Amino acid sequence: MKYVKKARKGFIGPLGDDIPSIFPIVFAILLFTGSILYANQMVAQKAKQNSIREGAMALSYLVTENGFISKDSFEKEKLCGDKLKPRGASLGVTFLITYKRFCNGIPIDPASDDPNLNPYSARGDAVLPYYAGSSGEQGETWFYCSNEPKALDGALFKPPAQSVLLSFPIAVPCPDEDSYTNGLGVVNVISWK
Image 1 (cartoon, rainbow, N blue to C red):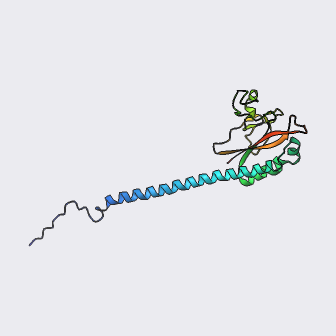
Image 2: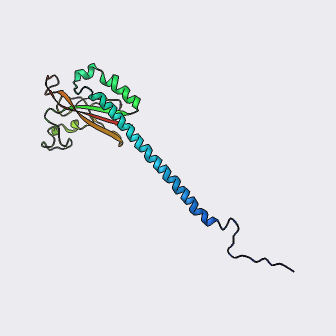
Image 3: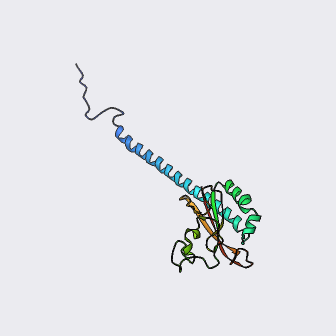
């Protein structure tokens, strides 16, 4: 007697029946791994932004610790070369710090040409926080300090997209650089990596 083996329809083999269920498992593993990598990237980006902000705060403490700044005190204390540049290097941030004298008031919109919004509108880019230059005129960058070699004197400098800009009021000599009376000034601390 001959045994006839009945063929089972649709049976591919022990592994063949499990292949359709492997695809959702592989997809789920890839989705899980991708979400973990995305979350890790977001955490790293926030950590970088926080380190830039911490660097800007540390530098701003150094430039505002006296509450008053004059060109003589800035040069005598060697604030830029002896304090700011080494501190920026130790924090790993690049910075541009600009000092401005606003003895006639602070403009509402520094980029505006309207004299009601910006009393220094005729001066152009020199009143913007990113302007690296040295001018004795009110509203313009009085002097600056930077550890960025691309920050050219007398030029508008545009830092990278992930930068931090902090502005603080400070007392400055007004209406002239050698006046004994104080007026309103602004120190802008811009830092990035």
